[in-house]
Structure formats: structure tokens, C-alpha cells
Image 1 (cartoon, rainbow, N blue to C red):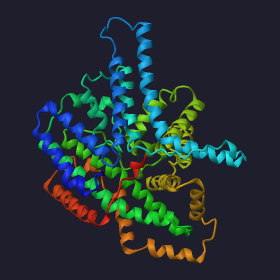
Image 2 (image 1 turned 30 degrees about the horizontal axis):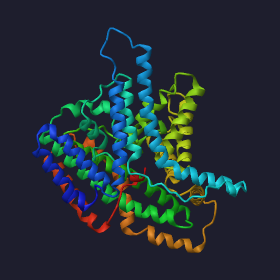
Image 3 (image 1 turned 135 degrees about the vertical axis):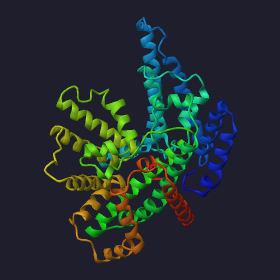
Image 4 (image 1 turned 90 degrees about the vertical axis):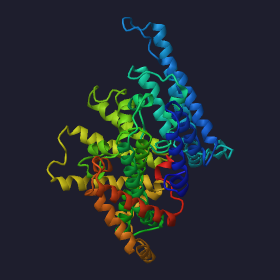
Length: 478
């Protein structure tokens, strides 16, 4: 089930909200958990069992990881070993589930390709097993791991109610594509939170603007991007336009989902953290990763980069840590070597900026120049993110930079890409990207005119949604 569907907007969400507010406080988490499992298992009920298994393991480990309530005495070696063992069980079980379901196919395909290249066909696997990727597994495994890690570090206390913990893991507003919640961010809200009209109204505005981003901006830009990336060859103008369209598509698709998730959370009384902060206004790649997918970048920083040593062990170790984190971050996005290359490029760029010190290496440029330079670099790396494989990415980049001359029939692509509707969509996307404020800032003070704008945008988006059919979010595949 997706947010941008008639089933969700007109039936599922109203029914869940109506029952939620009709129930007494303690029953609301149970209802929200049950509704979330229905939402998650709508396409494939088998996925529910996998999420439940992960939830049970981490709930039990969390209880075993609780620090002894003896502030005046240190932990004994036996207690410390026991806690480390249960933390290891949690991390290994989560990463094993993620690794098998997400990377099994990639491992088999890579092994097959290597054996074929070496002429060792006899060592190729002789089975045709293909593993289906459960939706959202990359998000809820990271989210669940943050629970046990925070408890082990003493930053949170375990929940004693399995229903409350299951609600935290499965909460449908952000289950499939984030933001990645840390337990410490919502622990107090799971125990007690307020439900106000102001919070609910702001949630509706968030949801409305997120739907607008998805339906009115991301989807039309995606049509242009698909035309360019699916073509066999392109002129440079069409290649750059396609990359630009994809940059807009992935931003509005993902930030639109995040806005809708934050809005739905507010409707149920939860306050989720910001996930985007105008990333295409970044003046460096370091600045970009402070603004893009904030919940992932900070998760990787706190649970991977800092434990590896961060920048505390000298420059070389810092650059290595950045490379490792970004390579793994790229692989987290998908089971393809394209994502590894994408992460590696971002890691190398981050290391380059770190090597030059705190001063921006682009300080000689005015701010618009720094923004343009950063955006252009991000735009080029998006090619690896969007292309189906490395040869396709290489071919696309060659077309962008005019390395190969396209055949005459490539001119037909422009007739598909440069329609008035497509050009208007790209222009509006650009204006919103570089001029409009983020939804969180814009909705902080609700007024009647702003509420009217949100209502008008939602109404138009719902009308357009009727003609677009099924349109899942890009990050559903991650």
C-alpha cells in the first residue's frame, strides 16, 4: 500500500484515524501496530512474519541489555560479557536478515559473472533461486538496531511492553522509507504524548505538501528522466536534461514521502525529526550530507563512523573511515555495484574536502557558484544511482559529455522529453527547489492563507493522482 493511492487516502487512513481516536490511550498502540502490519503486508503478507521475527529478537535483547540499577557499583565482567553477547545477537540477526534478502541476488550474479570471465563455468551455481526484497527492510532493521545499541550505551531504557516496541518498529507512517527513527528520539513519546488540534492540523499540511511534491512534481519529472535513461543514445542536451529531471524526481519523491510520514506522525501525536533541509542549496558535498536524508547520514555517523574512530585517529584513518562509511552507505541503498560506485564517489569527495580543512575549497566562488558547483557534482553522481548497471551509467555519462556522437534517430527523443508540460514541470520543480522554503519551516506558523494553499495543492494532487495510476515511491525498493 502506498500513500499516493485512493485506497490509502480515502479508506485506510480515515478508518485508522477514526478508530485510533475512539480508543482509550493504552489501546491505541495496539491498534496502530495492527494497522501498520496490515499496511505493510498488503502486497505480500509473508513480509509481516519477517518483521515480527526481527521485532521479537530485538525486544528480548533489549530487556537483557538493561543496565543493572546500581549506580554506585560498576558492572561485573560477567554482566558486561552477557550484555555484549545480547547486543551481538541483535546486530548479527538484523544484519543477517538484511544481508540475505538484500544482497543474495547480487552475490550470486557477481559470482556467476566472475566465474564466466575466468572460464570456470563449472563453478557457477546450478540453481535459479531469486530472493524477493521485503519492502522497507533497510529502514526497520536500522531503526530496530538503534534500540538495542542505545540501550547498551545507556542512552535509553528498554520498553517493558512488547506492544509499545512493536508499534515503534512497525509504525506505518515511516515504516517503508523513513525517516529512520532512533529509539531515543521517540522513547518518551511512546510512553506519553499529547494530541492537539494544532498538531493534527500541521500534520495535514505536511501530508498535503508531501502529496503535492510526489504527484505534481516528482512524477512528471520522472517521466522525463525515464525517457532519457531508457533511450539507447542521447544528445548532450537531452542527457543533461534527463539527469536534471532525475535529480528533481528523487528529491521530490523522497522528501515528499518524508513530509507525508512526518505529517501522519503528527496526526497520531508523534513528532518525527526533519529528514531534508533544502539539500540542493548545499555549498559543498559536506554541506549536502548535512541536508540530504538526514536520518540516514546521522545514523551512519553515530553508529558507524564514530565507532570506527571518526576523525580522532589521524588524517589517513579519517579518510579511510569516510570511504568505508560512504561505500557501505551506497550499498545500503541497493544491491548493485552502481550504488557502491555512487557511495565511493561521495566518499572520495568528502575526503577531499576534509583534507583541505574546515575552510571550503570553493570559497573563492560566490555563494551561487558554490551551490552550482556542488549541485553539478551531485547531478553527475546521480547517473550511477539511476542507471540500471555500470555499462549503462558509462554510456549515459559519455552522452552527457559528448564523447560519442548519437545517430540521427536520437533526435526523436527530444520530441518526447521537451513537451510543454514537461518543461513547465521542470521549471516549477526548479523554482520550488531553490526558492521555496522547506515544509517544516513553512508550516511552523499556520495561517488561513497557508492552510488554503495546502488544501488547494492537495485537491489538485488528488485529481492528478486519479490519472497517474499506481506510482510507488523510489525508496520503496531500498
